[in-house]
Image (tube, rainbow, N blue to C red):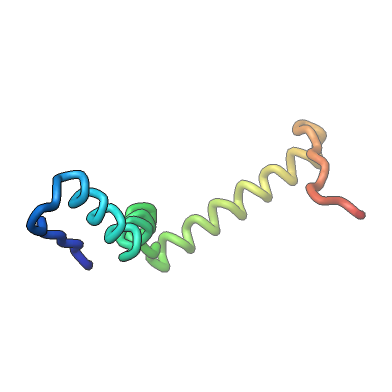
Length: 82
């Protein structure tokens, strides 16, 4: 990771240093990279993915059975024909 560093020049006030630092941080692209790292998720293991898929399939089959029996409301399909 790139660290941005700014040193105070002779005859430069604190506001100038802060302004230069801010500009350097914006141009280096550190902030967007840190934000993507913060919100990134790690890859799930093969077993976890498989178990999640099986649970989803079970839930879908159960819901389809309830709809056939008339015990669950039928949701309209999203998108539909255009």
